[in-house]
Image (spheres, rainbow, N blue to C red):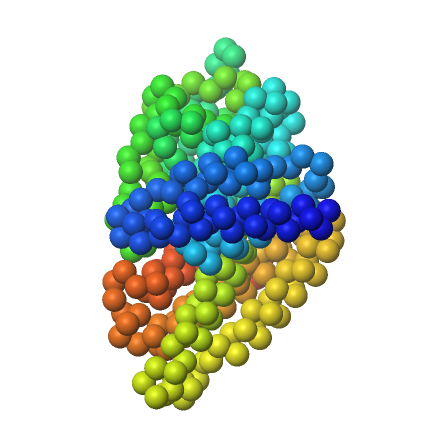
Length: 353
């Protein structure tokens, strides 16, 4: 068991070194989509659920997200999208769908997106549901527009969606990006994270057969998958925080060590990050996850990440203010993380209700 863990760690380090590090600036500046890296993770067996408990799956894959986020949170976010799609397929009671897609998603042959930003906000009372579904022979016909879905592509990319059949019934489906009637429009006008393969998705009477329906009761299904959906986001912030701490330490002696007079030091952030890691460890020592406890740690992670990237910018000074510098990239990534569904506002509302 220990040998397997060590081998997996070395494999992950190699894939990051070969398939991610050389492309980080291109991802940030040119909106390059590192789908090859995601596929290599699958090829290396780093996303396999074989002979693992649900807890082991979650913890091992969270580590992959965290290590990826230390180097590039944009790509770690794409990985989160893929893991969210994997979560849908792993938990569906549609065995035909599971048998068809699970191994292909875990091996990286197929990549997945989430498609649940709007539905999650709908359940929180923040938005109306954007997709509707009309029953037809052998399945449903979907219409509507999803403003932003990430980690998509024309070939071998699938994503989950939720659509309303009527006031009392919502369904969740698994959709191919090349479905007839589906139009994708790429979005690259963001402050950062433009290499995330994000598209506006317009559904014009897209037929979805019953074998691609993840659940006929989307509301109950969301309750089931929501803890993992949010849990996989926590390491996005932890990875960026750790990278920010490292960047602070690298410039500690510049300009005659004047950074020591700044109020926020790496030791402060290290202690806060250590305490947060302990909370994560305690949370996942339980077999059953309470989604509000997960959400509370997710929110705490956001605030620590924002604090860490701002401190890094101050410690790096003018060097960090360059558009394509690592500190400024992490700053932009952190603000995206704060607005990733569930957003800070969404989380605050949920935890105060």
